[in-house]
Length: 611
Image (cartoon, rainbow, N blue to C red; front, side, top):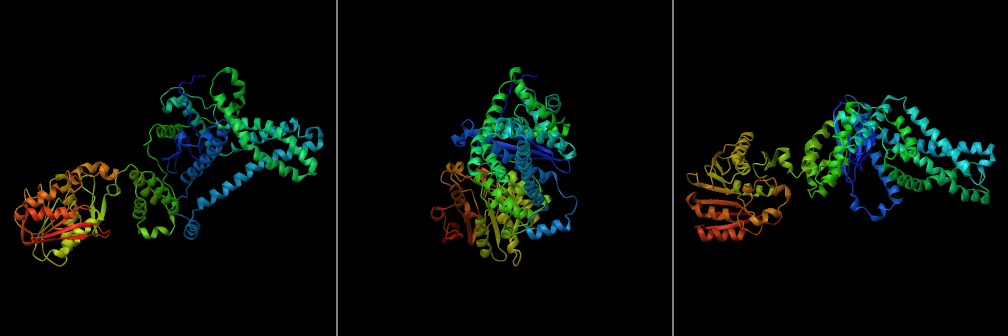
């Protein structure tokens, strides 16, 4: 037996056509879908240091881990079924009817029914049936039933073990379950490969043992053994109760059945501590204690294919990465789902990253081609639609602004292409355009400074072109920004003359209307901006100098040379900047008057200066 040098706490289980691996801080499930493509889902777990202290006490931790592992395992199993088992081709009429009327998929109904049947069968097979068969024997051999003797519980435990082994042998008949046992083998081999200190490659994993000390199969055997002792101890007071109350027949079986259910946490807690102790050593002295579990693992694991090993390796590496890297992103399966499921999931994930919940609504509405107001009407989301939603959702979790991911945004009713080369146009800037549209007259010439994506210039050119003739010029110091602006003018068929210029530097002539949305964030406040703005949008379009007013001073210094008599300068500004900006122009230029326009939030957003 190879010596283990990298013992890990990561464990897992086989799921439908895949493997789930669970670490301290994350759980990763990798499944091959019906197209043979690998899909990964990774979810963060509450780290140990943030869990309540009492959940880490010996014996109690066994119960907690048993329950959480069971819940997480069942959740991974259900999720894998949603990916691996899908309806071929177009949805059937029944599937479509169920989706339209009940807002659920056929798969969800089948999964719910299968789960209920599975729970009932498990309780019946492994708790009630052994008890019933033992009662039959005890009726013929009263010595077994004296105060629920140890022999009684040995017989009951024997039946439970026989039924368990018989159940495993029965499942080997089915090809799909044999494949699940192969994935179980891939899970064990991958963990062993890591613990042996070998690189996680398919070839290295193939050479490792498919038996592991912390296997759930071994845990079940320990549970069977410990249950004999625990149930035997509990049998004495129960038998006295039956004798005192005169309880017999079916009622005694029913009470005994529920008594065993109540004792399961104790059995699980003790069994967990034993399993943990046995996994600490590879000594041959404890081999006899491990041997029964190994023998059962011979039945529940099979040699995996290379494709199965790839799934196990990916799941292990992702679980390990989530434990080691707090920024390791969560991942979500691309599969059929519902609006009522995907939206809350996305919003909860965004809340953890301080991302506005409205972004989740935008992602879903854009992918489905429906307005945000229609999201309250639940419906099934197809896999094809989900494939549009999930990549955008996951990229948004990295912090990248939504409209950079989408590639464009709506501004004043026009589609404006955006990426990291330009600032994303904000809704409040539409107020600047609205003021300009009402100011421009036929035959006027317009200049837009610091045009960036060209949103203001394009929207203005398109709007006024509907009923009057004007010429629009736009400038920016960034060639990259101008490339985006030219593309937006082409997309929207806007007639705009773009010039590379640092404000007025390369501009010639005078203009009736000059607009500008210059950088106005104070330099010291750049680092306090939200991460999606600070880390992704160009600083050149944000930084307005020490007090945020540098560009307004520069515009004021030269605007008189470029504004026509009676012309209007329209500027966007930041909160609490409007009065300072007016003072700058009143002290620097011979303007006739100035006014401030508030946005819908009541913020003084636009300054209009007439010359």
